[in-house]
Length: 192
Image 1 (tube, helix red, strand yellow):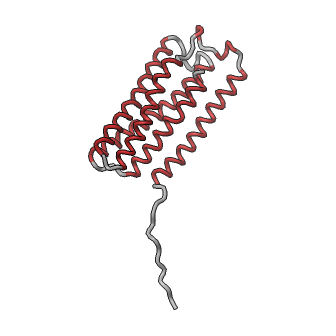
Image 2 (cartoon, rainbow, N blue to C red):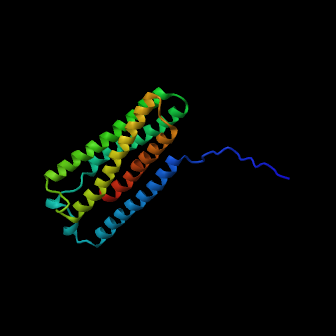
Image 3 (spheres, helix red, strand yellow):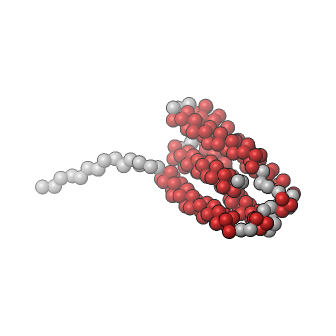
């Protein structure tokens, strides 16, 4: 006797875009953990004069706090945009997503202004060990932020056009949450 085999319809538990992004983010967390660990170990073993910035300068932690608030607010707007999108309110979601993107861009622009100020005062990758680590870690984060902002911009455009897939949005959202979530760790470790 032959019994036909029936299979249940295939349902993705986690969309491939999200799974792929989670794997990528996992590797990036390890990458940043390695850089921050190297920073911490080097700092612990360095003499004060070797570790300090030229001419007694300090990293602008207070100014960077403003950047940090902008980035965290961007992550909150992304969360609310996702809620609105899921509720079928595409117009509201698009406005919130645009706000998240603009705040992310503001973060990068303010970081660039900070870099410009430090460079004009002689802080370079060659000026001190702290300067080298600062530009390496913060610069790597900035590259990630720019790529994520581009993805958010594409998501916003597609949402406005009515062609945004949930898979693309979730992938971009996952990457943005990584960029937002890793920054407080970098800020607290590098600037203080």
